[in-house]
Image (cartoon, rainbow, N blue to C red; front, side, top):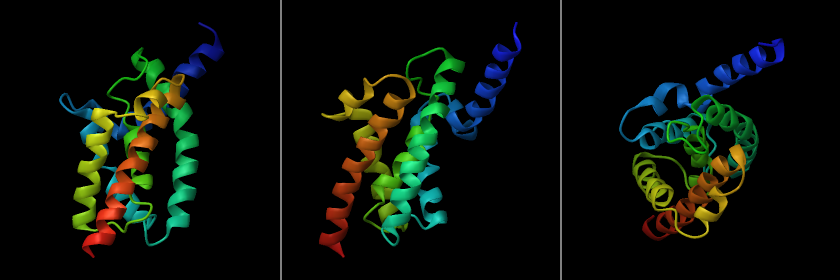
Length: 161
């Protein structure tokens, strides 16, 4: 084994901690749902929601870009194209879900449910983005699902408040 192979594996193991959502992706049933539970509180703690959409965009774009190599590492570790245990993409998607809506108990639950519906059903065009290569495809389909869920959440928020 060469030093570069050992360092790549060590790097993949380190990035795998993030890819697996600090262990939430290892839940045997519904790892994507378990990982998604980290998204709304993270957005709320950072204040990166409809109260500060500029912060949500900055955080969402930066974490999307950082997420590509993180998800690449997760796919290499698990030896699959888009393993369900890689949940960093689900977590980051919530910056798009709450881009135009503040996070509170009602919007948190509604946004969570809407995102999971779009992420699981993968209606057009989400499935097309999933076909992009490597970590880009892993991140992109969830970002689009988050944007679609966020659009519906924002409309509902405007109607009911």
